[in-house]
Image (cartoon, rainbow, N blue to C red; front, side, top):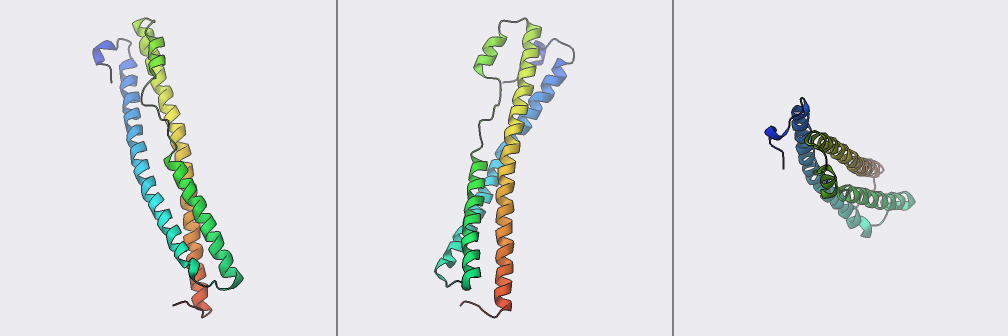
Length: 167
């Protein structure tokens, strides 16, 4: 819960406090938005994996076709796992912990303000590190999925070029 402006007495602290709280609010909104996007990507990767698995009953186009099928399944499973890890990267902080707040109470009002501000900045950077990790896992999953889709298109093109098609 934001402190009222009348409780902040140090010059400049009010501005910095408001900016940090604003950035934390934006950060939490970004986290929610990213989780929504990750859910969509998760469904997308899962759908592609299911699509590839439906071809499991079709005869492979020789050893190369079998190898492509197996590598597609493995890569998509890895991409699916990366997306899942991205979704479950959590443990964000929204404000100082009760323990940290309890430590702050014993100081002077000015020291409490500075300690709170310092802690809010620390919370922001903690969340930023978690967001970077989350994004890296998601990007890795998307890159692998994109690679599989491109390889599938190339394989399908080569199969049609060679004249072997399945009904």
